[in-house]
Length: 398
Figure (cartoon, one colour):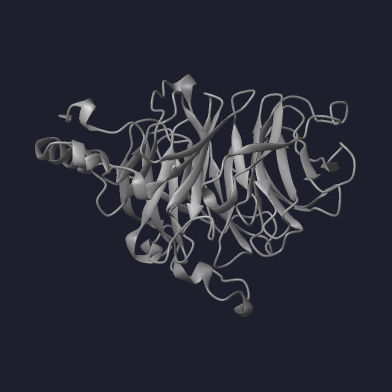
Protein backbone atom coordinates (compact mmCIF):
# COMPACT_ATOMS: atom_id res chain seq x y z
CA UNK A 1 0.00 0.00 0.00
CA UNK A 2 1.09 3.60 -0.62
CA UNK A 3 1.65 5.38 2.70
CA UNK A 4 2.49 8.87 3.82
CA UNK A 5 6.04 9.47 5.09
CA UNK A 6 6.41 8.03 8.56
CA UNK A 7 7.75 11.35 9.84
CA UNK A 8 4.28 12.85 9.43
CA UNK A 9 2.65 10.27 11.73
CA UNK A 10 3.08 10.70 15.52
CA UNK A 11 4.46 7.51 17.19
CA UNK A 12 1.59 5.64 18.88
CA UNK A 13 -0.61 8.59 19.92
CA UNK A 14 -3.19 6.05 21.16
CA UNK A 15 -0.83 4.63 23.83
CA UNK A 16 -1.95 5.74 27.31
CA UNK A 17 0.18 3.66 29.69
CA UNK A 18 2.46 0.62 29.77
CA UNK A 19 3.75 -1.97 32.21
CA UNK A 20 6.56 -4.51 31.66
CA UNK A 21 5.83 -8.10 32.69
CA UNK A 22 8.47 -10.66 33.75
CA UNK A 23 7.51 -13.17 31.02
CA UNK A 24 5.57 -13.31 27.74
CA UNK A 25 1.81 -13.38 28.36
CA UNK A 26 -0.70 -15.88 26.97
CA UNK A 27 -3.95 -14.37 28.29
CA UNK A 28 -5.53 -11.56 30.27
CA UNK A 29 -8.88 -10.83 31.93
CA UNK A 30 -10.36 -7.67 33.39
CA UNK A 31 -12.04 -7.45 36.79
CA UNK A 32 -15.77 -6.58 36.62
CA UNK A 33 -15.13 -2.89 37.32
CA UNK A 34 -12.07 -2.74 35.04
CA UNK A 35 -9.76 -1.57 37.82
CA UNK A 36 -7.46 -4.62 37.66
CA UNK A 37 -6.28 -7.07 35.07
CA UNK A 38 -5.10 -10.65 35.61
CA UNK A 39 -2.28 -11.66 33.27
CA UNK A 40 -1.23 -15.29 32.73
CA UNK A 41 1.76 -16.84 30.98
CA UNK A 42 4.46 -19.45 31.38
CA UNK A 43 5.58 -19.36 35.03
CA UNK A 44 3.57 -16.16 35.48
CA UNK A 45 0.23 -15.23 37.02
CA UNK A 46 -0.11 -11.64 38.21
CA UNK A 47 -2.67 -8.95 38.79
CA UNK A 48 -2.00 -5.36 37.76
CA UNK A 49 -3.92 -2.23 38.76
CA UNK A 50 -4.90 0.03 35.88
CA UNK A 51 -4.97 3.37 37.69
CA UNK A 52 -7.79 5.75 38.45
CA UNK A 53 -9.88 7.15 35.63
CA UNK A 54 -8.13 5.04 33.04
CA UNK A 55 -5.19 7.49 32.85
CA UNK A 56 -3.11 6.55 35.89
CA UNK A 57 0.05 4.45 35.87
CA UNK A 58 -0.28 0.68 35.87
CA UNK A 59 1.34 -1.14 38.79
CA UNK A 60 1.72 -4.78 39.81
CA UNK A 61 -0.73 -5.74 42.52
CA UNK A 62 -0.14 -9.44 43.28
CA UNK A 63 2.17 -12.26 42.20
CA UNK A 64 -0.14 -15.27 42.48
CA UNK A 65 2.64 -17.85 42.06
CA UNK A 66 4.29 -16.70 45.26
CA UNK A 67 3.19 -19.10 48.00
CA UNK A 68 1.43 -21.44 45.54
CA UNK A 69 4.36 -23.16 43.86
CA UNK A 70 3.83 -26.66 45.26
CA UNK A 71 0.07 -26.62 44.71
CA UNK A 72 0.05 -25.01 41.28
CA UNK A 73 -0.85 -27.35 38.39
CA UNK A 74 2.03 -28.16 36.09
CA UNK A 75 3.09 -25.83 33.33
CA UNK A 76 1.64 -22.54 32.16
CA UNK A 77 -1.90 -21.27 32.60
CA UNK A 78 -3.26 -20.99 29.05
CA UNK A 79 -6.28 -18.83 29.83
CA UNK A 80 -7.70 -16.66 32.58
CA UNK A 81 -11.30 -15.55 33.16
CA UNK A 82 -12.53 -13.13 35.82
CA UNK A 83 -15.73 -13.72 37.80
CA UNK A 84 -18.48 -11.44 36.39
CA UNK A 85 -19.77 -10.39 39.82
CA UNK A 86 -16.94 -10.83 42.34
CA UNK A 87 -14.02 -8.40 42.04
CA UNK A 88 -11.57 -10.71 43.80
CA UNK A 89 -12.25 -14.07 42.09
CA UNK A 90 -10.93 -15.42 38.79
CA UNK A 91 -10.08 -18.78 37.21
CA UNK A 92 -7.18 -20.16 35.18
CA UNK A 93 -7.07 -23.07 32.74
CA UNK A 94 -3.86 -25.10 32.62
CA UNK A 95 -1.88 -27.24 30.19
CA UNK A 96 -0.85 -30.92 30.44
CA UNK A 97 -2.98 -31.95 33.45
CA UNK A 98 -6.14 -30.17 32.30
CA UNK A 99 -6.81 -28.46 35.63
CA UNK A 100 -9.08 -25.47 36.21
CA UNK A 101 -7.93 -23.39 39.18
CA UNK A 102 -9.91 -20.82 41.19
CA UNK A 103 -8.22 -17.86 42.89
CA UNK A 104 -9.37 -15.26 45.41
CA UNK A 105 -7.13 -12.21 45.72
CA UNK A 106 -8.75 -11.27 49.06
CA UNK A 107 -7.98 -14.60 50.71
CA UNK A 108 -5.76 -14.08 53.74
CA UNK A 109 -2.10 -14.98 53.44
CA UNK A 110 0.12 -15.34 50.39
CA UNK A 111 -1.70 -18.43 49.09
CA UNK A 112 -4.64 -17.18 46.99
CA UNK A 113 -5.49 -20.56 45.41
CA UNK A 114 -8.91 -21.65 46.66
CA UNK A 115 -9.89 -24.71 44.60
CA UNK A 116 -8.63 -26.99 41.82
CA UNK A 117 -11.23 -28.51 39.49
CA UNK A 118 -10.17 -31.76 37.81
CA UNK A 119 -11.86 -33.60 34.95
CA UNK A 120 -10.21 -32.74 31.64
CA UNK A 121 -7.64 -35.17 30.23
CA UNK A 122 -6.02 -32.51 28.03
CA UNK A 123 -4.97 -28.89 28.24
CA UNK A 124 -7.70 -26.33 28.97
CA UNK A 125 -7.64 -23.82 26.11
CA UNK A 126 -10.37 -21.42 27.14
CA UNK A 127 -12.62 -20.48 30.07
CA UNK A 128 -15.87 -18.51 30.27
CA UNK A 129 -17.95 -17.61 33.31
CA UNK A 130 -21.72 -17.56 32.97
CA UNK A 131 -22.69 -13.87 32.49
CA UNK A 132 -25.17 -13.80 35.41
CA UNK A 133 -24.56 -16.95 37.50
CA UNK A 134 -21.02 -16.70 38.81
CA UNK A 135 -20.92 -20.26 40.16
CA UNK A 136 -21.14 -21.60 36.60
CA UNK A 137 -17.85 -21.85 34.71
CA UNK A 138 -17.38 -23.26 31.21
CA UNK A 139 -14.12 -24.79 29.96
CA UNK A 140 -12.99 -25.97 26.52
CA UNK A 141 -10.17 -28.48 26.16
CA UNK A 142 -7.88 -30.35 23.80
CA UNK A 143 -9.57 -33.54 25.00
CA UNK A 144 -12.47 -32.75 22.60
CA UNK A 145 -14.89 -31.75 25.32
CA UNK A 146 -16.45 -28.73 26.99
CA UNK A 147 -17.34 -28.95 30.67
CA UNK A 148 -19.71 -26.94 32.83
CA UNK A 149 -18.51 -26.58 36.43
CA UNK A 150 -20.22 -25.56 39.62
CA UNK A 151 -17.31 -23.70 41.21
CA UNK A 152 -18.45 -24.82 44.66
CA UNK A 153 -17.68 -28.44 43.70
CA UNK A 154 -14.51 -30.15 42.51
CA UNK A 155 -16.03 -32.24 39.70
CA UNK A 156 -17.73 -31.12 36.49
CA UNK A 157 -21.50 -30.72 36.59
CA UNK A 158 -21.96 -31.50 32.88
CA UNK A 159 -19.71 -32.64 30.04
CA UNK A 160 -20.32 -32.00 26.33
CA UNK A 161 -18.63 -34.11 23.66
CA UNK A 162 -17.29 -31.99 20.79
CA UNK A 163 -16.38 -33.08 17.28
CA UNK A 164 -12.72 -32.00 17.72
CA UNK A 165 -10.38 -30.11 20.04
CA UNK A 166 -12.20 -27.13 21.59
CA UNK A 167 -10.30 -23.88 21.02
CA UNK A 168 -12.83 -21.43 22.49
CA UNK A 169 -16.15 -21.40 24.36
CA UNK A 170 -18.55 -18.49 24.93
CA UNK A 171 -21.99 -18.13 26.50
CA UNK A 172 -24.70 -16.27 24.61
CA UNK A 173 -25.49 -13.01 26.39
CA UNK A 174 -29.17 -13.05 25.38
CA UNK A 175 -29.74 -16.76 26.09
CA UNK A 176 -27.13 -17.70 28.71
CA UNK A 177 -28.20 -21.37 28.80
CA UNK A 178 -26.64 -21.69 25.34
CA UNK A 179 -22.97 -21.60 24.44
CA UNK A 180 -20.88 -21.94 21.31
CA UNK A 181 -17.67 -23.93 20.90
CA UNK A 182 -14.95 -23.22 18.33
CA UNK A 183 -13.28 -26.40 17.09
CA UNK A 184 -9.92 -27.37 15.63
CA UNK A 185 -11.54 -28.93 12.53
CA UNK A 186 -13.17 -25.66 11.38
CA UNK A 187 -16.57 -26.46 12.90
CA UNK A 188 -18.65 -24.38 15.33
CA UNK A 189 -21.09 -26.18 17.61
CA UNK A 190 -23.96 -24.72 19.64
CA UNK A 191 -25.00 -26.41 22.91
CA UNK A 192 -27.71 -25.92 25.52
CA UNK A 193 -26.74 -26.66 29.12
CA UNK A 194 -30.28 -27.94 29.76
CA UNK A 195 -29.90 -30.55 27.01
CA UNK A 196 -26.83 -32.41 28.14
CA UNK A 197 -24.12 -33.47 25.71
CA UNK A 198 -25.79 -33.31 22.27
CA UNK A 199 -25.14 -30.23 20.11
CA UNK A 200 -28.17 -28.22 18.97
CA UNK A 201 -26.31 -27.18 15.83
CA UNK A 202 -23.00 -27.90 14.07
CA UNK A 203 -21.74 -26.02 11.03
CA UNK A 204 -18.52 -25.85 9.06
CA UNK A 205 -17.48 -22.22 9.56
CA UNK A 206 -13.91 -22.11 8.23
CA UNK A 207 -11.50 -24.07 6.09
CA UNK A 208 -8.99 -24.24 8.97
CA UNK A 209 -9.22 -24.33 12.77
CA UNK A 210 -11.66 -21.92 14.41
CA UNK A 211 -9.48 -20.21 17.01
CA UNK A 212 -11.99 -17.89 18.65
CA UNK A 213 -15.57 -16.62 18.66
CA UNK A 214 -17.78 -14.05 20.38
CA UNK A 215 -21.52 -13.47 20.66
CA UNK A 216 -22.73 -9.94 19.96
CA UNK A 217 -23.51 -8.07 23.22
CA UNK A 218 -26.95 -6.91 21.98
CA UNK A 219 -28.12 -8.77 18.87
CA UNK A 220 -29.28 -12.32 19.60
CA UNK A 221 -27.82 -14.99 17.35
CA UNK A 222 -25.10 -12.79 15.85
CA UNK A 223 -21.79 -14.61 16.20
CA UNK A 224 -18.30 -13.66 14.98
CA UNK A 225 -15.65 -16.34 14.45
CA UNK A 226 -11.91 -16.08 13.77
CA UNK A 227 -9.76 -18.73 12.16
CA UNK A 228 -6.30 -19.82 11.11
CA UNK A 229 -7.53 -19.26 7.54
CA UNK A 230 -7.05 -15.50 8.26
CA UNK A 231 -10.78 -14.77 8.05
CA UNK A 232 -13.32 -13.26 10.41
CA UNK A 233 -16.89 -14.35 9.69
CA UNK A 234 -20.15 -12.99 11.10
CA UNK A 235 -22.92 -15.58 11.33
CA UNK A 236 -26.65 -15.02 11.71
CA UNK A 237 -27.84 -18.01 13.71
CA UNK A 238 -31.48 -19.05 13.75
CA UNK A 239 -33.38 -16.53 15.96
CA UNK A 240 -35.51 -19.29 17.47
CA UNK A 241 -32.41 -20.74 19.13
CA UNK A 242 -32.13 -17.58 21.25
CA UNK A 243 -35.73 -16.78 22.16
CA UNK A 244 -36.82 -16.08 25.75
CA UNK A 245 -35.65 -18.99 27.87
CA UNK A 246 -38.89 -18.92 29.88
CA UNK A 247 -40.46 -20.61 26.88
CA UNK A 248 -38.17 -23.58 27.40
CA UNK A 249 -35.67 -25.25 25.13
CA UNK A 250 -36.20 -24.32 21.51
CA UNK A 251 -36.49 -27.28 19.19
CA UNK A 252 -35.35 -27.17 15.61
CA UNK A 253 -38.12 -26.69 13.01
CA UNK A 254 -39.15 -29.84 11.21
CA UNK A 255 -37.88 -28.63 7.85
CA UNK A 256 -35.71 -31.63 7.16
CA UNK A 257 -32.02 -32.30 7.57
CA UNK A 258 -29.79 -29.82 5.77
CA UNK A 259 -32.56 -27.44 4.71
CA UNK A 260 -31.86 -23.71 4.46
CA UNK A 261 -34.06 -23.10 7.50
CA UNK A 262 -31.33 -24.77 9.55
CA UNK A 263 -28.36 -23.05 7.92
CA UNK A 264 -26.65 -20.08 9.61
CA UNK A 265 -25.97 -17.35 7.10
CA UNK A 266 -22.47 -15.92 6.80
CA UNK A 267 -23.60 -12.31 6.67
CA UNK A 268 -20.15 -10.69 6.55
CA UNK A 269 -16.51 -11.68 6.16
CA UNK A 270 -13.25 -9.84 6.82
CA UNK A 271 -9.90 -10.79 5.30
CA UNK A 272 -7.25 -10.22 7.99
CA UNK A 273 -3.47 -10.13 7.68
CA UNK A 274 -2.60 -13.24 9.72
CA UNK A 275 -4.19 -16.29 11.40
CA UNK A 276 -6.69 -14.98 13.96
CA UNK A 277 -6.20 -15.87 17.63
CA UNK A 278 -8.67 -13.62 19.49
CA UNK A 279 -11.78 -11.73 18.50
CA UNK A 280 -14.30 -9.55 20.35
CA UNK A 281 -17.19 -7.28 19.46
CA UNK A 282 -16.55 -3.63 20.20
CA UNK A 283 -19.06 -2.51 22.87
CA UNK A 284 -20.76 0.87 22.97
CA UNK A 285 -24.04 2.74 22.85
CA UNK A 286 -24.38 2.13 19.12
CA UNK A 287 -22.84 -1.38 19.09
CA UNK A 288 -25.98 -2.86 17.53
CA UNK A 289 -25.69 -0.61 14.49
CA UNK A 290 -21.99 -0.19 13.88
CA UNK A 291 -20.86 -3.87 13.99
CA UNK A 292 -17.21 -3.33 14.88
CA UNK A 293 -14.95 -6.23 15.89
CA UNK A 294 -11.39 -6.31 17.22
CA UNK A 295 -8.91 -9.08 16.45
CA UNK A 296 -5.30 -10.05 16.99
CA UNK A 297 -2.93 -12.78 15.80
CA UNK A 298 -0.79 -14.88 18.13
CA UNK A 299 0.20 -17.93 16.12
CA UNK A 300 3.95 -17.61 15.40
CA UNK A 301 4.23 -21.31 14.57
CA UNK A 302 1.98 -20.65 11.57
CA UNK A 303 4.05 -17.72 10.38
CA UNK A 304 1.96 -14.91 11.89
CA UNK A 305 3.98 -11.72 11.66
CA UNK A 306 1.28 -9.21 12.59
CA UNK A 307 1.92 -7.58 15.97
CA UNK A 308 -1.02 -5.18 15.70
CA UNK A 309 -4.49 -5.17 17.16
CA UNK A 310 -7.03 -4.33 14.46
CA UNK A 311 -10.54 -2.93 14.86
CA UNK A 312 -12.72 -3.70 11.84
CA UNK A 313 -16.04 -2.42 10.54
CA UNK A 314 -17.53 -5.62 9.14
CA UNK A 315 -19.79 -3.57 6.86
CA UNK A 316 -16.69 -1.96 5.27
CA UNK A 317 -14.00 -4.61 5.65
CA UNK A 318 -11.41 -3.48 3.09
CA UNK A 319 -9.03 -2.02 5.68
CA UNK A 320 -9.21 -1.72 9.50
CA UNK A 321 -10.81 1.22 11.23
CA UNK A 322 -7.87 1.26 13.64
CA UNK A 323 -4.57 -0.59 13.89
CA UNK A 324 -2.76 -0.38 17.23
CA UNK A 325 0.93 -0.93 16.58
CA UNK A 326 2.73 -0.28 19.87
CA UNK A 327 3.61 -3.95 20.47
CA UNK A 328 6.88 -5.30 19.06
CA UNK A 329 5.84 -8.97 18.97
CA UNK A 330 2.62 -10.92 18.45
CA UNK A 331 -0.34 -10.15 20.70
CA UNK A 332 -1.92 -12.88 22.79
CA UNK A 333 -4.96 -11.19 24.33
CA UNK A 334 -6.92 -7.95 24.69
CA UNK A 335 -10.02 -6.57 26.40
CA UNK A 336 -12.14 -3.43 26.15
CA UNK A 337 -12.22 -1.31 29.30
CA UNK A 338 -15.70 -0.82 30.79
CA UNK A 339 -17.19 2.48 31.99
CA UNK A 340 -16.43 4.52 34.04
CA UNK A 341 -12.74 3.98 33.25
CA UNK A 342 -13.49 4.92 29.64
CA UNK A 343 -16.40 5.40 27.28
CA UNK A 344 -17.66 1.98 26.18
CA UNK A 345 -15.64 0.64 23.28
CA UNK A 346 -13.08 3.47 23.32
CA UNK A 347 -10.21 1.99 25.36
CA UNK A 348 -8.42 -1.36 25.42
CA UNK A 349 -5.79 -3.30 27.33
CA UNK A 350 -3.47 -5.58 25.33
CA UNK A 351 -0.62 -7.96 26.06
CA UNK A 352 1.62 -10.35 24.16
CA UNK A 353 4.94 -12.05 23.57
CA UNK A 354 6.92 -8.81 24.04
CA UNK A 355 6.13 -8.87 27.81
CA UNK A 356 4.26 -5.58 27.57
CA UNK A 357 0.88 -4.77 29.09
CA UNK A 358 -0.44 -1.70 27.26
CA UNK A 359 -3.48 0.55 27.58
CA UNK A 360 -4.78 2.29 24.44
CA UNK A 361 -7.34 4.97 23.64
CA UNK A 362 -9.10 4.69 20.28
CA UNK A 363 -10.05 8.36 20.59
CA UNK A 364 -6.40 9.20 19.84
CA UNK A 365 -5.68 6.43 17.34
CA UNK A 366 -5.20 7.59 13.74
CA UNK A 367 -7.41 5.57 11.36
CA UNK A 368 -5.23 3.60 8.91
CA UNK A 369 -7.20 4.89 5.91
CA UNK A 370 -5.80 8.37 6.57
CA UNK A 371 -2.40 7.10 5.47
CA UNK A 372 -3.43 4.91 2.53
CA UNK A 373 -4.03 6.02 -1.05
CA UNK A 374 -7.50 5.61 -2.68
CA UNK A 375 -5.94 3.18 -5.17
CA UNK A 376 -4.72 0.93 -2.36
CA UNK A 377 -8.13 1.03 -0.66
CA UNK A 378 -9.88 0.03 -3.89
CA UNK A 379 -7.42 -2.82 -4.45
CA UNK A 380 -7.88 -4.09 -0.86
CA UNK A 381 -11.67 -3.99 -1.20
CA UNK A 382 -11.60 -6.02 -4.40
CA UNK A 383 -9.21 -8.57 -2.88
CA UNK A 384 -11.39 -8.90 0.22
CA UNK A 385 -14.52 -9.54 -1.83
CA UNK A 386 -12.76 -12.22 -3.86
CA UNK A 387 -11.28 -13.91 -0.81
CA UNK A 388 -14.37 -13.83 1.42
CA UNK A 389 -16.98 -15.51 -0.79
CA UNK A 390 -18.93 -18.06 1.19
CA UNK A 391 -18.68 -21.69 0.14
CA UNK A 392 -19.23 -23.84 3.21
CA UNK A 393 -21.57 -26.71 4.00
CA UNK A 394 -23.70 -26.99 7.11
CA UNK A 395 -24.34 -30.06 9.25
CA UNK A 396 -27.43 -29.47 11.43
CA UNK A 397 -28.22 -31.68 14.37
CA UNK A 398 -29.86 -34.95 13.48
